[in-house]
Image (cartoon, rainbow, N blue to C red; front, side):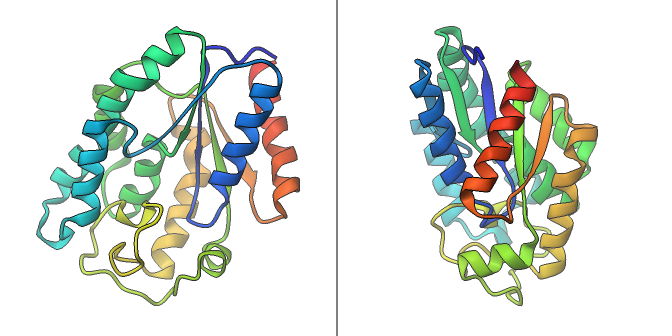
Length: 225
């Protein structure tokens, strides 16, 4: 299986185990002699991390929703131009924690039209979409239990987009959404195979990590063999 020059993204709800599966896939590719460039979204470059800092630290109740969406896409535009495209051109496999797929779930659940998200994504990254997006599917109740979050938390602004996806952010800073919001996010992630411009594989993330890894391996093999 040749993964040189392939762009693979992991996405899914909080608590789905993206980090663990990214680490396993990175090690697997390296064991086969492949070169891996691992990154994250939003962030991954000096400029993108500055945008991430704005999104993490700013009071989103004062930020226009369109501004929020544009900041996410601006971060991706810089990441693709500075990291993803050069790494792919050198034959590396690029592994990314979240991408436009996250906006298609979180911000669409918050009320953004999905077609607008996809159009904005095309403007931001051009033709550089993931060759495969693996969505780790998990009921939100299980994700809350794994992360220690409380499903009854309510955010300051009902239409806020993706702030809750930031790894390492405090629950109050993340403006945690209601359980119904997260159920809608899960539904939208599960719809991605039918609407996303590039292939999406949905993997059950509820079993133990080793079982999920077997399903991830199969998804990668099916996509690239």
